[in-house]
Image 1: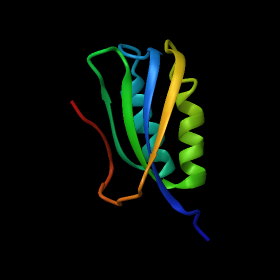
Image 2: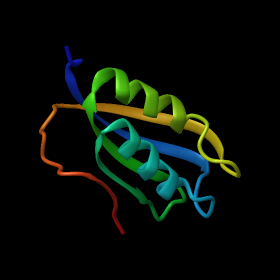
Image 3: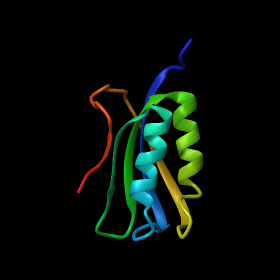
Length: 94
């Protein structure tokens, strides 16, 4: 039986741009079957929205706290929002 469906918006602080954070996040999210998006913010953070099964969201959040090689994650802010089911896939937005 699938987990309950949830949605979380995250902001990742640290050295997270220029280290393939967005591409790696997309790959992990697609592997887990999550939907949503990831983007760079002008202030140097990365922001993402994930929708999917709660246990899979927990896995991607754990990964976000480490990031890809070369990243230095200082902090991850999590904002839980109502699940909307509005995405067809997980993509990088510009």
